[in-house]
Image (cartoon, rainbow, N blue to C red; front, side, top):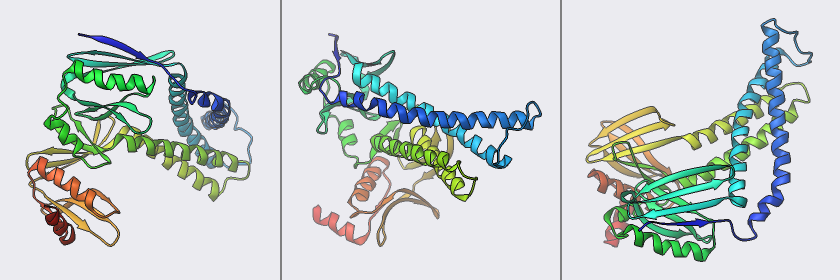
Length: 351
């Protein structure tokens, strides 16, 4: 039997956001205005170069003005997008609502942030389990595509009640093999599905969101520094700030819309790099050898085939997470896994 439940913002913490809103709006407006000024200078310069209007008076060279204008255009696009996203999230936090509609075949989530609404549908077959996450007791779904946040609105008691009620309506068997497969992944990784419902191994969406916010903030700081440097003649310092801001902005865009992924099938690994729906690169590795390599400071998990080597993951630590990921891939793909002597001995001791 279908039922609907609406959750709204609760608690005093949400008003802290509204108290900081005037400060944030002032900074955002100042940075947006700076970007628009640079875009205006770019338009005037282009019109002057085309002979439509006189050259704007300036002690700065034409090449410097052109560089500053192109930077301002890229910055304004990124900053405007970020401001709209932030205002939407703020509206949802203060006055929004999350409406859940659950029936035995699906779960529908409607997020309403005045004046916009966003609807998502989760079919029953894609849902593995429902749980409460972290100290905030956020309500999340474990799905075949990874972990999906349902809501942080409402009271903890309401979310606890939904955690028990949703699985009962959907008839979930939370001990299913697919759920165990998903929970078996080490931290920092998620499962996704491609258009043909084949398994994809991708980086953690939660981690990427955090990195995106960090780079967006870095872009804002670097851009303000660049704009302030234009008060003096354009020099190497301003060029370095502009370059760093652009690289940081493009990095935030890549984390938001781009990703690397591994298609995992029987005796086959395929590495892909995407931006949105566009496939940028692909490397097919049939019958590859999975190898965990131990360096002086870093561990690496590598897929090797006929002299070709593609790094799946690398980083510091004790190597256990790389063994964990390698064993998961070896189990899913039926490919052999080679471990360093120390980690192989520890694995034998653990049984």
